[in-house]
Image (cartoon, rainbow, N blue to C red; front, side, top):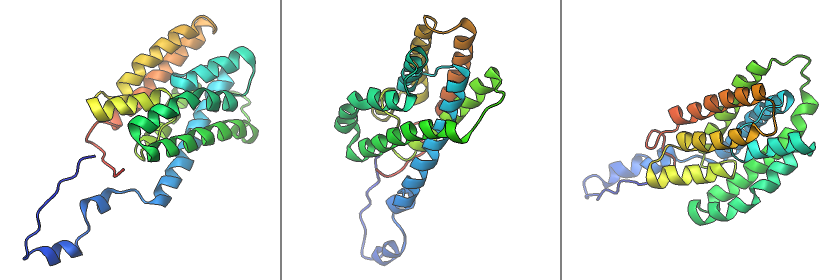
Length: 222
């Protein structure tokens, strides 16, 4: 994030000393980051649970993890955590240690919450159309919370944020393109109607990010 540097004259030093700096105004405090990580990952995990219960998939590494879960019966949380491990090096090299650490924590929380949520919530009846739209919206909102506190959920999220920060490519639109590729692959393993609903959810998810996370609209200190 670029910051404007101003040269202080003797006549305005005292005034500047009393006023908070621009960085102080927009920096996230530690407790704000902690709350965002907890709440954001809880919201994402609820969306993942809706998808898992309805046998739907999403994009990015979460989509790959859901596909593997549907095909093998293995735990989504474990698959999601392992599948993200190769991307942390890119996060460290390109996005910095703070982003990498918060992303690692966020991935771990989603893995844990995704295993815990089905134990706390029981769906007697879940309409698949509702699950697709609501699940996509929940994951989009949760990701938006994480993005605004310089965190992600690994994988394509890391690459999307890097491209947005350095090249101005909208994170939501880039992820939408990648997600479409993943969902096309899903046609090979899931019923046709499930894939169509998954595509609907992916559109909802990425539009939320694209419309609310534009470059320059929301700035926060690193």
